[in-house]
Length: 413
Image 1: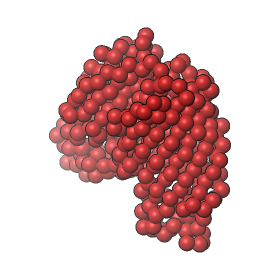
Image 2: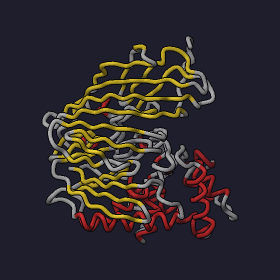
Image 3: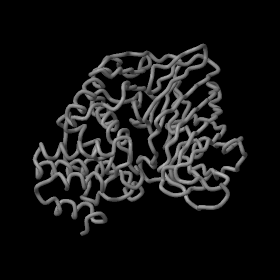
Image 4: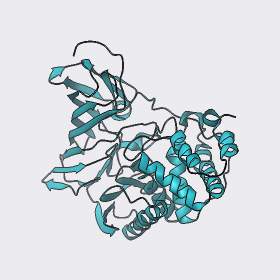
């Protein structure tokens, strides 16, 4: 309806139907996304803010945007695409948004370029689908994740390439017809894909979950990757007593960068050392629960996913350790941690704090409270305060001294 609300929200249920054409030789991509969205925010909205790192890394150009068939003008700033809805969308109302863009994959792996790249014989595309989000700056002084996205009940993707490629994708086993590959995923907050002409697929099953790994000749060892993935899935699900949330799990070798998580999938850099493989797979797999199953504002509250995932991974592996950086607060945004100490503070010190809370509460109460957090926010958005409050509510001892010391903005100094 006509009018202005000057408001958007993350509380939007959205489905995505996506077609992408990829020129393997040049790295040029053309993406058409149809978003069926329903406003569930409790109030009117008049725009949506979509996240896509192609806007920041890929020299994105938008060739067309419509809302219910009527043309609107989308604007791009940093990694955010703002789309006016052409009026007010009341609470409970639905509309269809279609956006088409072109972009070019990076040809190197420097800085964050590996997230959206065509390098080393591999195409890697992370957060390339314009997705309901909020405006978040991409820049940060470390490798933290500057994202927050809502979970979608259904995403359908069709990938067309101009030469033969093997697609490593999450969700249902892809259907391949010539150079066209299609797949579908449900209850995800992002869809990441990797392509290579020579991917070798290895399969396995863990507790009814189909595991597919994609490695390249001369790269990661398929048997080792599969063995550690099976160990991680089983160990983490057993520790949390919360089953893995989906029916499939995909591991893809990438040309470089860092390990990375996405719902139903993880990325492993080709150069991962054998001695670090078990840890990296366990850490990224733990993100299937902390970020995949329960999302959070990864830019403002990295503790909620990085500390929790690392703590669970290291608990399963028996590799909890002390930090190599001075003690620092754990309630900060990623932009407030240095490159040299981001990992040691958020991941390692965060894990130390969670382990201290576990010792205070006792194993049974601690793991029950953590399980409650996951169940209460299943496929929704949690966060640092919500996670810690679940622990407080489940504890018979006073956690105040620990929380006030390490989370002063949340629990007072």
